Amino acid sequence: MPIYEYKCSACGHVSSVLVQGFKDPEGLSCEQCGHTGLAKIISAANYHSSHSDRLAGYDPRSRKSDGFFKDTRNIGLEAERMLKKAGVEPTEDFKNKLERARTDPGSVLKDYKP
Image (cartoon, rainbow, N blue to C red):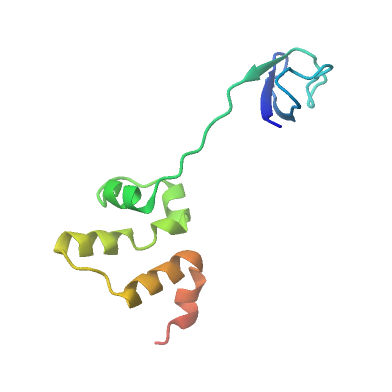
């Protein structure tokens, strides 16, 4: 069963509707204002880059959005880029620590002993 999105022509609210079959369901109305003038719209698509694509596209000089710093998958990209540039293969220990930092960023602080 596909999920379609409909936009209200009166207030602009977008609703997601689970649809059986391929016909628009009867009696659709806006969940915001109750208007019945809804038009099916094309939903936004998401694309997730592979790690190798993200590493290849990483530019340390480019301006980063807040989203870049909130995405834990970006932890260590600079270190990986530098290793690759130097032709050095990262050790298993390095890979394990980097993966742990990405999956549990707080663990870095927990393990730190001054």
